[in-house]
Length: 360
Image 1 (cartoon, rainbow, N blue to C red):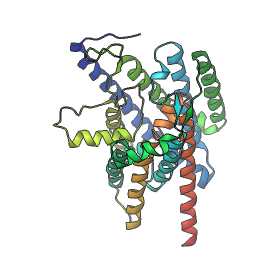
Image 2 (cartoon, helix red, strand yellow; image 1 turned 30 degrees about the vertical axis):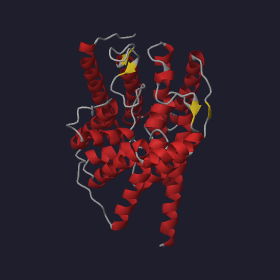
Image 3 (cartoon, helix red, strand yellow; image 1 turned 120 degrees about the vertical axis):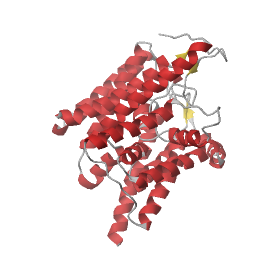
Image 4 (cartoon, one colour; image 1 turned 90 degrees about the vertical axis):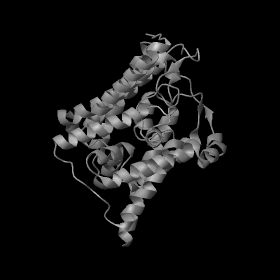
């Protein structure tokens, strides 16, 4: 359903979008903190322990996101072509290089941006440093000197994206989603409510934010521009959860708060929501405890990882949540390339760490 607004009600509608996103992100943060949901952790468990439980959790969340997005699209509630990830061209080299950088960096930094937020909310001061450094580093490929480098190098390599009709998208999403569910539920641990429920909730939140952005926040004709608009999104397109560029924009907003041109956006609200949700769960479970760096090498690893995540995440157009769940839910080919690159980068980093330990 399209919502027509006038200039007087536009601000109210934008506030509704922000509050809805914030509340959903609180739920996301709480569920992720409670279940230890982490893509890097899932890869680590497979490489080091041969335990696939957390990867199966990710599969359930991805399935819910894919099935939910397809349902919203099939019923006409959202238009997939208006999303951040669906584009006529696939920037394959950007997603490949950026994903490898991000994946390697998240291992050095002890977690992806989502995990960094959850660690901050449970008392990790070193994750707070990662948060700040990653946000600053992310501005370089967004608007800094490496943005020019990115546009003139990796962004030049692309190919035409496959076009999916609405029926094709629905059928393909159903097949992929149900296949992921069947694969994940083969693990007996996934049949426990304490493991399955948070995974379902995380995927459902991704879908709900798509709906908030693409339905509630959609204005067919903005009274100022007379063009369609998606309220409170940094990209000007329909968005769901992602935690690299929004961190950069949040730091910029906090630093230049008195500048009226700097406004709170959906991505920023989601970052704040995850922090609150993670904090609430940490206090309830009594797992909140202060944590600092253990050594100079620990500092160096986390700083280097933060820079790689900031630059790589923007270059790849998302993180393990942005591309790995929000992007994959759209069936955008670039998102699958980015996710595969992130996992590959993480595996390389784990192998590197094992190699270093063996040489000591």
